Length: 203
Image (cartoon, rainbow, N blue to C red; front, side, top):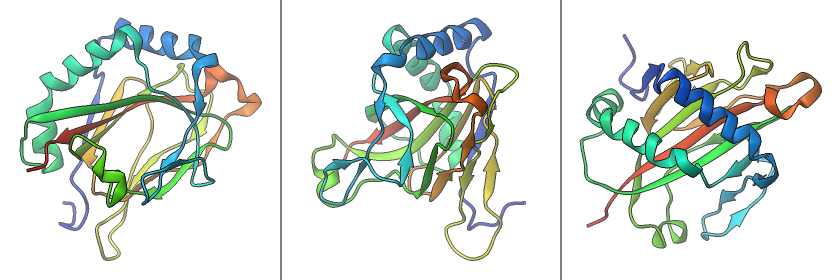
């Protein structure tokens, strides 16, 4: 039984239909030239590329955006129950494709925005989703998602990336992506994911 200080989370394997997952991965791989270095948002609201995050991202799922959103909507009640977040009306969606290549990582952070970074958003991030895409068998190692306890010395949750797996957790939870190793650093061998945040409107 998890400590009450360990954030609730939910893991759903085979989240999309097998062919839909394969097609989305093919889209991500074929979009290599469109990916840009990932940035992080500072307290002043500005985006910056730092050593905190070594990844690339693309804010475009193309024809798969609607498919992914509909799949999430169908599981929304389950996602709220699994994360311990009270159900809410989704005011906005933040969605991006991300790729972690050799040496990629995302150091410990939270997904909620504060101060100036919060003001230009249509709501607050409540639930964070990570959906994994990768060639099978995986040609990379590492890249686990680590969700830290809110306090105390409870063991963190460590979730391995697996093709067609969705993970959801509260956006206020501290978490990180462990270092990824991709021998040869081939683009199609990398750790791909869809990162998605569900926002609740502010009063």
